[in-house]
Length: 473
Picture 1 (cartoon, rainbow, N blue to C red):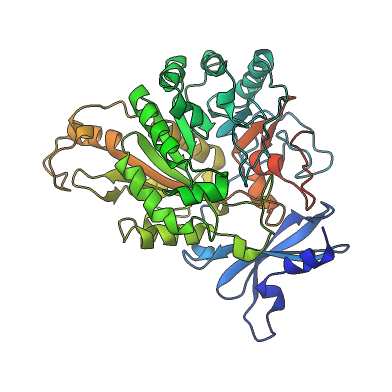
Picture 2: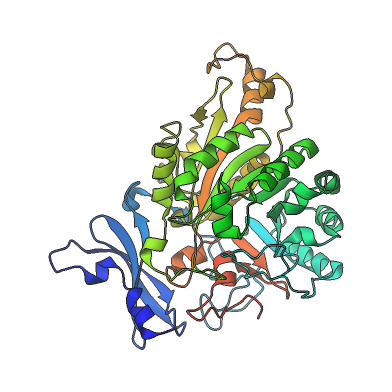
């Protein structure tokens, strides 16, 4: 990449005059985007926003916005007591992030293990973590997949599974793969998909449900075809809604997964929430993903092309006209606090959402063992993102008011189980904002071909020339 682009990557804080209020908040480690050398990095505020700043002796300074405005960066904490993974498949030789597998320096167990079933895809999106292509690259055979399930089972027997790609529905043996995961002992198996085959084949969702599929993680970027044309290259909204309908008929829970890109769909955050609630109870929640710059992407990596966790939280409050409030959301109990946000709500019979406040999300700042938070998340995700088991009056509605007074205990518990709705988001790291503290706390791990468990952001990490450290190696 040319030197001029490197200069453009320097953000506003690097150009600020001496009168601006700049303060170092804390120190971590990162990598140089050009040579991948491990270098010190600093979380720096200009009084408003927070940046990750680092300097390579060979390639100069880099500074990337990681937090804008409220909730305030320094109050967004969820302290944890680190825990070494019970099984480590790699030795420490080069140091983080070059010994992933996991190694003994990792600080969290596996919450979700991703198994990639294919590199092929039936779309060619402008943005793609996996840089998937419409090629006939060989898929891992069922024996390899059985090996992957076995490795996960040995290292993290109670974790959740996500089947991903590429586009995993391009495999005609996907029901067999799901069944293999069930036979391996995994109780929650989720499909990460663009939804096209679910929409196009009437009985396809039912066949996946029969094989043991729990949930669909549905690419869902907006409520207008303009958004899909911009991000996915074609009008897809009708297909997305039909995929939700087919999953509802089959009894599969759906999570909408919007990738948020400034200038393209950030203005539709509230409308996505509104649509998700209209499609409730088939839609169990929404999981926002701020755009990250690894894999395939068209834009230059500049700060105005980024959106941060607090901006999405603020947009949810503003664009929902206060139906949800920024104070309803909290840092995660599993991964690093800077990685994600979440909130759990009840869908009220008369419309609207009521936040569920519990001791686990009260953020009392008492450190908890990392694996305890992970296991709570495993259980919570599996329960929330699967289709509701209660199909009686609690899900059909109990009148037209927002009141839950007058319910007996059994009725109230049924109401909570059947009417819960989650709103969450996860900010994946790229080479520009890579924070090794965050990486060591990662709980979402991709299974490599040789059976290692590699943190998601490390596996997908690419340098300035889009060369990966792990993917495809």
